[in-house]
View 1 (cartoon, rainbow, N blue to C red):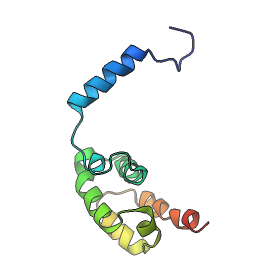
View 2: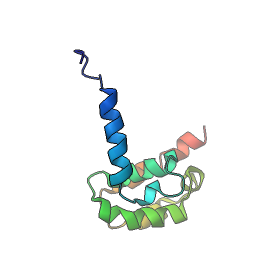
View 3: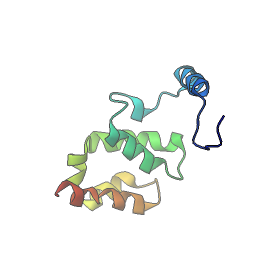
View 4: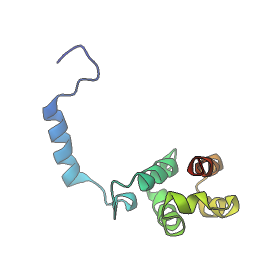
Length: 105
């Protein structure tokens, strides 16, 4: 192994991928389009300082109401906060709406 701390042994990566195939949890954000950046982004925001078990129901409701970034960009802050209610750290929900400015550019 080199002195570069970013070096990863390819065999380790292969072992990790094999482990993931057998041990991966069935999580809502991996269903449908598992590589959908929007679903991953929303799940990552929700999961900050929050347990996975708590997030699942919130994520599913959020995706039903805001299935894509365009729907979220049209959202009213009160509706977003209502769906977020119970997750805490409401600044996370408010920051999601910053996409409005980005979508309109």
